[in-house]
Image (cartoon, rainbow, N blue to C red; front, top):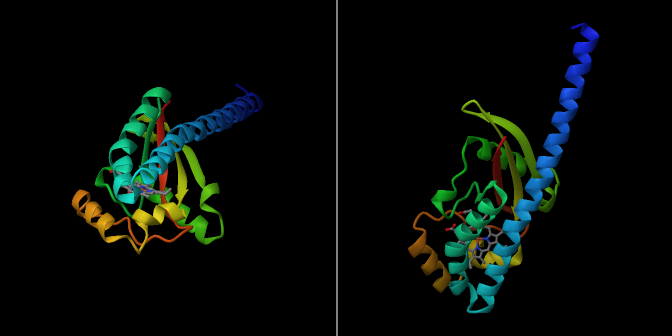
Length: 185
Ligand code: HEC
């Protein structure tokens, strides 16, 4: 192959690659919505039907169920993670930890959590995966269970379920964590 032909092949390969990454990112964004939407509804319904003590069940039981359903439906692996965890099962791996740290840096530089996301192709154990994360901001509603001024009965229930809970002391507008998705390529 001549140098020119080789260069042309490489260019078209990287263009296709960029298009694939854009398509995967679009797919990931819609999977995030199929997880985050029902989750927020379950939380709001729980709050309406008995306040935060009752709504803890929405997060405790329904979040993993909704994540599993969104994963099964989409073919992506879907979850949530954070640098300050409530449920130790949501612990970030090295890639997630690095991205969460970058999200904090981007927020410190002025970006709004709602606009912060990142995706890339990575190689894990010789296999290619597309991984994607989207930041989750902290709203007023979240402070009932993740803020600094949590009602005693809510704190007692959280203490019982999550003895090592680190996910308190957040303020409105902080990055509470992120949706994290991956798909084998
Ligand atoms: C009624 C209490 C309650 C409210 C309100 C609440 N959460 Fe949570 N949150 C929980 C519980 C309980 C868990 C642990 C869920 C589990 O066991 O998977 C959790 C876990 C999380 C996690 C997963 C990471 C981790 O720490 O384990 C994120 C991210 C999160 N919440 C974000 C939010 C956001 C954003 C809001 C507001 C829109 C919110 N939460 C409102 C109780 C609550």
